Image 1 (cartoon, helix red, strand yellow):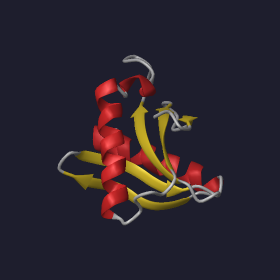
Image 2: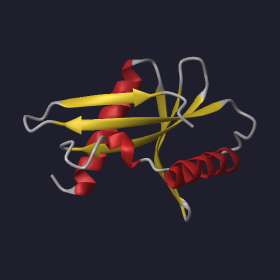
Image 3: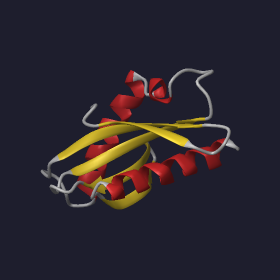
Length: 118
């Protein structure tokens, strides 16, 4: 599986995971010059949730969540604030979550979802 397909498949899996828990996905792959937010959802209690998704096919290069460096975390915070401003949501309650998706050779996936990590 190529890198782009792996990433998109992981994002799809996390979107389904969120919907199954009562979230509503409101935006995907939102981009500005500074970067991209993978998923933006509204939680069942109305909080905006920005989700960074990292996908891997093995642990050879470490856990998927280890790919979220301090620099990436800082960029996610800036991107979330930019989204809030551009969408007229400034002042809304929000959090930043991360999801690691590990795909096995037989196509199964394991999702490690962490709420409010940033």
